[in-house]
Image (cartoon, rainbow, N blue to C red; front, top):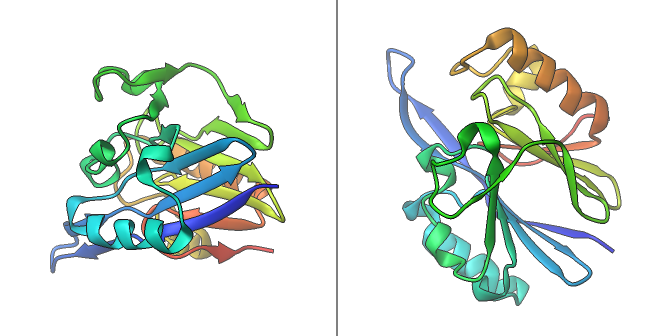
Length: 190
């Protein structure tokens, strides 16, 4: 059985000109038989809340065996040091951004029911984690950063390739029953 626990819900703020004034990513723990996987590690400001979540769940950060980075922007990576025993996975397009990380070159199943899926557009190396649990979850990172992107069917405001970003959003929403966006609470799309 696979369990998902959102450790912290991310947020995103904009200034009067529409620029980003703050960003904290969502961080999620996936527990599968013999596995503890964290998807994105959020920012230093979110560290106290992450520690509280781990205590409440009853898992130690040292027990996490894998960290998946949906991409390598700071707001998704600042707490990597909380997971000293974890193998860090990121897309090959972002290789070198995190020393010692293992580049993923193709879509891959990393545990039964847990797949890494290339969802570029926001960055060339953006990826999502598709999880077949009680329902189908897509941990989308900034490939689908906000519920608003789904509701309006618009690419992330910060995208290197908006057309490719829309293709990724369509791939995510075709698969998922529930989306865990990069900067907000999970939401159902079915």
